[in-house]
Image 1 (cartoon, helix red, strand yellow):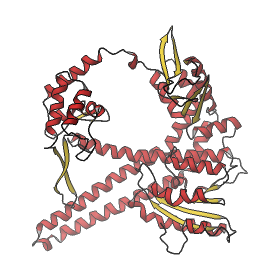
Image 2 (image 1 turned 90 degrees about the vertical axis):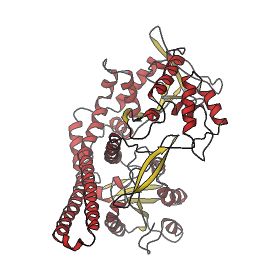
Image 3 (image 1 turned 45 degrees about the vertical axis):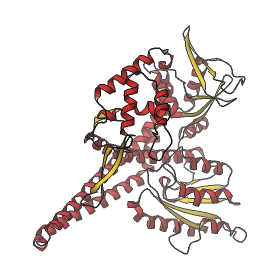
Image 4 (image 1 turned 180 degrees about the vertical axis):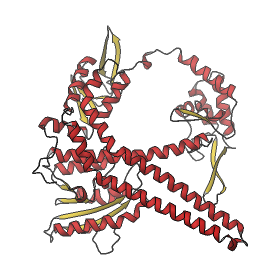
Length: 523
């Protein structure tokens, strides 16, 4: 989107390649949500000033994106798609690193990294004094990766606070999402601010079928047979959805919501809605589950360090684990697609390789304190941003306080409509409560921002020792592997992998013994 009406769009700028010989730049401003839109003009002014000083031919685009969205479709359509078509190098200019992305594993960053290595783009961050190109030193790449990781941690801290609000709703007996099949979400009115008051009630059309499915399970009938009966009865996943299958039946018959308990992220909460079945019927269905599971082997319960993490490089299918046999665990391709030539391999061979990989991301102990201090200084400007936001929120909170005091002084003017006075006071009180929550969110993110960098660096300095410690459990080794490695593949006896950012750059720094910026480097 182009708010100025005069600046060319990125696509329009690309069309001028044949006549324009200046360096081509795309200036990108981004905010995380609508409440931050006031920050866009400041970003725009900084970006335009930078482009004019550098004598770029430039276009300007701005984005208002929620920090909680799973993708950035608008960014892809307006920036990435034209960028892939460009015939000349493009300089992408963001005010700061956290305006670039808050997702270290996002698809857009993968595309950007590929274009960077092909020397088709450069990344400029004027406020961070950082300029990334194909031949950037390892220290600058490290700063970029750490910046993205820290921005991701801040975004995660905000999401944590949203999760806590969900937990409060759950503690009050309210389900925060879509009602399970057999119930429906309804709107029962409006609150003082005009927002919908929502509730969950029993679905009169499908509730009886859900009860019937519990009764069938309690009598010992399998999930597949129950699914067949319910399909014939016309049960669908939603009112206009697809017919239910076995997996749907298994899922909702194990949901305690139907007898009065909500299950959310491993915790249980009693809810305030009308139960669909009695607790004894739920218990009977669970007894049938237990009876049927006794005939199964215990192999599924075994914990293997690499179970589900490795694919076969030859055919792409999963590598499965079996054992222990004489104290050893073995891995081999499942070969669901046919023989592919994979061999059966002792897990100890791969454990040694994993240990070598973890050693490649080791940060020397003598470098760690200085590196943490340097990163803290680099992101001082980010913390100033958070403090500015807190001051803005506090100012608005205090202003509402004064408005409420003035309303009480002039309360006589509301004699004709006293209910209007109460509504206005309630509205302002609700806004103040929301401001307090925002201030808590920003304070939490501010405290975690730099300390999160220290955690990343500590893991990198101790990964090998943590992995091999006798006290480390199998599930903890799995967590360490997935924290540092991704896309694991097995090719013969060799374990192939990708390092998760910023550990890929840490490995590069370790290889070149280049941890801190040189004094003569471009800040």
